[in-house]
Length: 202
Image (tube, rainbow, N blue to C red; front, side, top):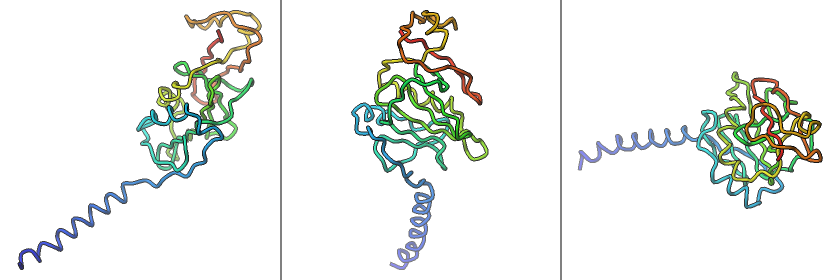
């Protein structure tokens, strides 16, 4: 009996260490706000396919429907079900078949919103490496497989597509004639290192 009593403090100490490791290893839940159309079934399809890591940052729990967060502090935030953007002259970035409208008004924090997909998906990216930020390009590529479950009905077009009435001459083998009445966004170089490769509208 005395040997059992001597073991108890050791066992208790190991249990305390294990508990401490569990507590310190868990990042707090990210507080978020659901987008107006977060309950759209298409957003559920996106949410269940969100990757465990984005741009090397681990996924974290959020407290709102159809949202996602990665990194501590969060470097990437996703909301599905935001307002679908209309025609705009803002920068359009095309990555792996997904068109994103880029907003750099709060750089180094960037906001990317899908164009031509309903419901729309919005992604906020902190690109400041000094504060744990990541590459916007990498983040969008990693999120692409989940976001692509929402079918595209429109695509970004360039001025040459609308005025010329033909597909762009950027070497895209899928370029086809464009309807001049189709809403368009203006492609241009991303203010940082984000690539721009606009896709013509069939």
